[in-house]
Image 1 (cartoon, rainbow, N blue to C red):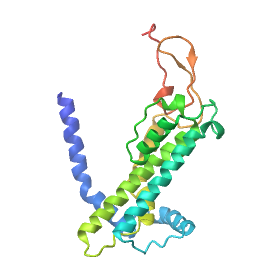
Image 2: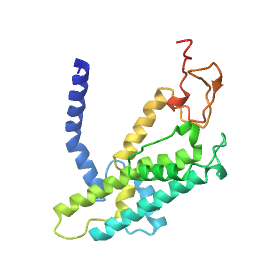
Image 3: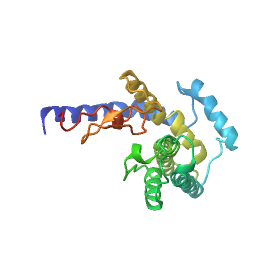
Image 4: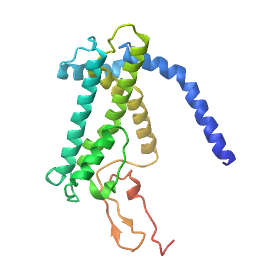
Length: 236
C-alpha cells in the first residue's frame, strides 16, 4: 500500500464520518414527510406521483404487507427488463439493429439489476439498444437502490417502534429517488461529468480498434468509455 493509497482511505473514512450526522438528519426528515430545502422543488413531483398512483402517503402498512409489496415491485421490475431485452429487435431507439438478447442472459441481467448487483455478462454498447440501456437498466440503477433504502427505513422503524407499522412502501420508494441522496448525488455527478465535456447523448463517435485501423462505431452515449479514443496496438 502506497502513501497516496493510505491518504485516500483516511480521507474517504473522514468524509463518511463527517456526513453521518447531517445526512442522517436530512434523511430522517425526508422519510418522516417533513420539510427540507428540496421540498419546494420536488414536493409537487412527489404529490403528482401519489395522485397518479392513488397513494395516501399518510397511511402505514403492516411489516408483512410492506415486505410483500416490495417483492411484487421487484417482480414487476424483473418482467419489464426481461421483456425489453427479449423484444429489443422490435422496439424503437435501436439504430444499430441489435437483435433480441437470449433467454438466459436476459434472465440473468434482469435479476442482477433488480437486486442492485448490476452484473453484466456482455458488452453493453454492442449488445443493448439505447432504449434498453435507458429504460431497462438505468432506471433500475435508481429504483433498486431506492427500494433498498425503503427497506432499510422499514427495518429501522421495526426496531424503534412498538407497533407493527413500518410506513408505506409506495411513499418511501419515491422519496428515496426524489428527495433522498440517490437523486441528489446523481444530479451532482451529472454536472461534474458535463463540466468535463462528457455529454450523454444519442450519438456515435468513431474509435480505432486495438487490432486494426478500421474505425468502429459502437452505439453508445458519448460519455461511455466505449467511445473514448483508443490508439491502435501498432501505434502504441
